[in-house]
Image (cartoon, rainbow, N blue to C red; front, side, top):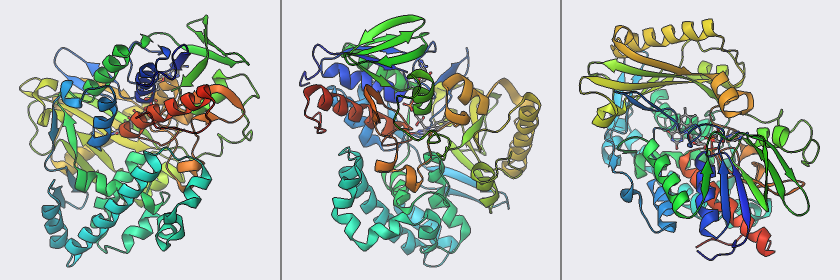
Length: 503
Ligand SMILES: Cc1cc2nc3c(=O)[nH]c(=O)nc-3n(C[C@H](O)[C@H](O)[C@H](O)COP(=O)(O)OP(=O)(O)OC[C@H]3O[C@@H](n4cnc5c(N)ncnc54)[C@H](O)[C@@H]3O)c2cc1C
């Protein structure tokens, strides 16, 4: 700690991953940090449901980019292993296609190459080349843009990569990029499905996100025993150990900055701080918490954004064990374009959905009874869809019937516990724009300097952190977002203006 914020009081609105990360970093710089979370638990969409017998992570379940978790905990003198046991999954995941075909994608890249080669002559070598380029893009993107907290357009333009031919390719779509490596549509799906993690599709996400293939194929897919909730618990403990105070059940209804500070109305009571970091969704912060007219953006700014998908979630405690499903299983129609169109172009409940089934109890006996499984189903949906009860009931039945047809597992008469989340959950419980589950999609126009930054145009002393701000969606990115917003606060407090790394 450099103590650059000693004597500064900083309020944080929201205790999602970005808010908890910011709380820890800001407090470690000496700020007097108070976090206000509207619900009775922190974690945000990385929430939990706990019954006597089953435990569910309600949001993230893929622990990717372990080095960024290491980086977070190392800053505070600890490591993930002080808080939870991490296991690497093998296979990474299983896929069932709706034509009856199935594949396990192995953790070992050499075996993955062999699996690709089996399906298309030359595809093993193509995967090797594809992953080499993905690795290069990852190193470049992460080290020089994302970790380095470069959010100004001139930083990107000045860098030599933009002068190389590669930059042009990376601005094309992922679909075109992947087309140049593989012919088999199923192999293309196997390297593109991770785009859904970014709230995008192969048709609207720039090819630079090929780096996501490096993340799963090369760096690996991990799982913290006890679930992602262990990560949230660990972050809360770290923030508190740095001196942050966390208030739950404390909704914020207004953030009003003036020339000397900021007044936050939390649970009806005004609190003064020198600065405020909002982890509430940026559209909610700017349109509902800040005073009208102070944000310097076009009136239509938020209407014009591309929001990432919402999700229909089923949390099922199931009797008996399930052999047919892996820890992570994807069910994909061989032509998945109509589902992406139903999410991004022509919002509708999908007829032939692609979906993801998570069964953490395959790896972790602590989340289900011995003769049971914890099953979470995630179907990406268009944000803004009407999800009235009858529609949800019908879709739930459609999905359970489909799982039976595609994987051979009939869950319907084995369900001992059931809960759902849908578009209205993300809209009403988390104040997410149009009920998106993930936040702003990573389209070209919502990437890097074009994504909402930590500073809010026209507003002093109030900042954004979290998945819809820079660097973006996902737990690892939100960990970084808390680090980077702290750099912005330090720069503004010290009058330095420039972002200095905290290390
Ligand atoms: C279903 C699902 C699956 C996902 N899967 C993965 C995955 O496998 N791996 C991965 O890395 N990422 C995954 N993600 C993405 C990842 O979980 C998110 O990007 C990340 O958790 C978002 O964190 P955030 O900081 O933006 O905060 P959020 O989770 O959005 O939290 C914001 C917090 O602010 C609070 N808040 C809002 N308004 C107010 C207010 N007015 N007053 C007080 N508090 C307020 C909310 O209650 C909430 O606690 C998934 C997300 C979802 C929804």
